Image 1 (cartoon, one colour):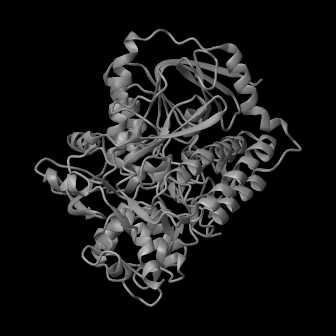
Image 2 (image 1 turned 120 degrees about the vertical axis):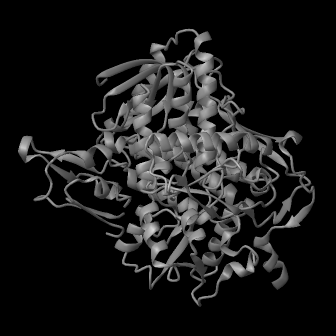
Image 3 (image 1 turned 45 degrees about the vertical axis):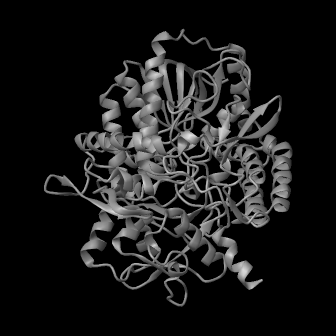
Length: 574
Length: 66
């Protein structure tokens, strides 16, 4: 066994995005000692640092009913949205004080509209996501949070030494992705904040996704293994992004700036999907429209040629990563259309999907909390930075309040030994399978059997193929050094959560937003105002559903059945 | 896969890029005044441009395509 470092903390936070940062700050406010472990560099890791330039926030004086209408889907916890609004503003102002360079007119933070909103909400990051998260990092460090970067956490430790546990989570185990040193972290409370899941390390042009390329659902896999209930896995959504690049979509800033989407003939195809709001339709419908146009061979592309020069200049500041991607890929935005493509399902992009949590961030396992997009966000609409920061806030507050009453965590040595040996095993398999071989096989399953529009037959085949990969290939993976070992863990974690994701897809026998089943083409508000829960128990996955609580609905849903937009044209033609 | 290049004459070996690269593409080689950043894991570059933005000496260039 390599060198081992042991840390003890009240609250352990795993992950390094905006949910992790606000969880850390709130737990510190409650007086807890806090350690944050990030597999990348905290401040540069995950989605938050690569954000699309806006923090879509409420400000005092806003029409709260307009906010509610924007987020009043039938599967949304609407009262919780209302409760989150003032906290978003609190976060905006805290970030302003700690040096985030919001775009201002004089002293006033200005906001832009955005997809799905008929009012201005997006506070603009004057130097993009990287500057925002580095300023937030500074505040977290000033407040005395201990930060460990490049620590790949591999497993949660449990009081009874078992996975799944009948006891509580008492910390975590990981390794340094450069030195290979082992880390054991003992914690009274652990908050998982590892972000959304995606196929890790996609190749450009593969339909398998984009940056950040290392978000592989690690936290969700760890929570699955300790027996936490997972939810909303089937409603993770789809993503769209520039074709042939690893670049994020950037639509939160691009659309309200006057960008348009056109097909290969220059037709503004949103006219057929939402003639009133066009590109400012909901994000889900916008993604769906672009994906549909692409899958039907009409080569959708973003058209920025009509942007006034001062707006193009502003975008270069607000979404520097995206504009540099366009530029160095050879596009002249004043002249060229930039083609967009879609990512196949098996990702959580639009909603948070993962641990089922209470409004205070508690999972179903004692001692374990979750926040942001690795959780179901207690049915807040996910995928927006402010809902993630607020979710982190609530989990940090709750964990911080509970630790004074908790016993010192005791970590079972036998469990540490066994999990450490398993975590490092790929380093000893010189003749094992390469990362590339298993990665390629998994990507093929997603493209061939899952795709954009799903079917029960193909999903069952996909589940069979993923199970085969997990049984035969995953245990033989090799790693040449600690850097590659971290990639191997990312790939294993994603493969492990794919099975519950695919089973949840199969379980929900309807279509809804970006979840499309060709064998169940209706949006079914009669039968499916339900959440699907998945849990690993006794070596098997259990799935069940529970009705959406009526307390979620400030705007009562229409309990009717209607054909999903994706299948209406098919009916007309048939 | 994207492309990242360290312009060795301009690199002072300050290590900022090595510290902050989100996907751990860059590492240090050499000691003292000879220390330089090198591209250790080119396949893992995601073209996020963080290293290029952070470098105080304009010693790193990134391209979205290979």
